[in-house]
Length: 193
Image (cartoon, rainbow, N blue to C red):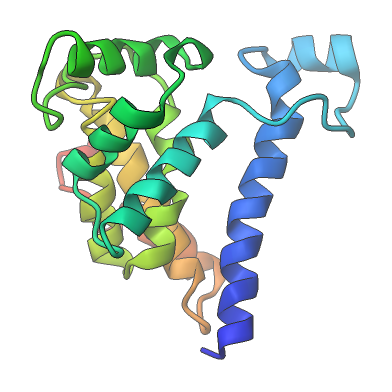
């Protein structure tokens, strides 16, 4: 893939996620009926996104620090150094305090944490830097910093998100290929969710 095309895809993926997050921020947690009642349609950006975008930036920092092969320990270290915990949603705060105050191993910090989309919404950089299977595997492991145990399907969502992003970077990918990659690399038991 030509460098300028690759740059455009990476930039588009990251910027598109940020714009979507910022547009969705005013309606976060609302049903579609409530959104329609209160806003009709959301066509403007009211603020700079949610903690999902902030988590994505912290993950990018971990990727750069690890020369493109982040481990959950790398991401945890970035959290320790840079996270303003008051700006994050409850499951991320729980994980942060388990990590920093409780001294838990980063691989287990997210075990039985509150269910949310936090790990899936920030994981796209892993899909950018890896092929599909590796993206799925690495995303699942990194998502353990926020989710695990009974909320492991949140890790599965992260794995599915990363593998679809990775497949979208395939120059010959079709929509069906991208959709299929969402579950192609999950454990058989995970596909039951």
